[in-house]
Amino acid sequence: MFLIQKLITDEIIEEKITQLKSIHPKLATVAEKIHNMDLKETVNTLIAADALEALLKIHVIREARGNSFTDEAIQQIVKELKPKHPVFADIVERGNQMDVRETVGALIVVQALERFLKIHAARLATD
Image 1 (cartoon, helix red, strand yellow):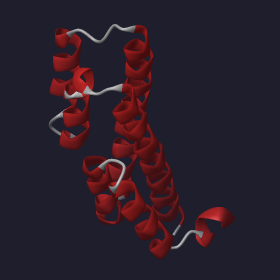
Image 2 (image 1 turned 90 degrees about the horizontal axis):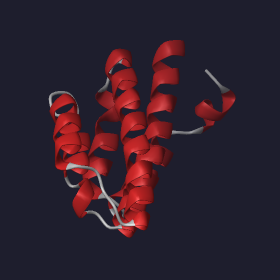
Image 3 (image 1 turned 180 degrees about the vertical axis):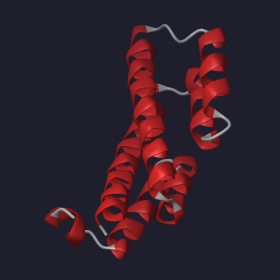
């Protein structure tokens, strides 16, 4: 395992998750489940989080410019995400109702979530 990942304890991660709850409680619930995930579920969640991050970035750009995703595009993304990642699907579904501030908050939490998932995956793959 990488040295930096060995230095990050479960207590540090729990502390960070508590901090994330104040920014975006729904996404923080995903972080709380990471320690129960196996490697396959961790990697699948990481891929979905990466896709969600990209969508949030596009949304914040579009929101700043005054246009948003079409309802059809959102429903297609939600349909694909919902079976395995219902929290992510909910965030996408609410996307057009989120302002720039809420979108940036979700981005911050998703990026932290991705770091936690990477650390967890590295632990599972190397232990």
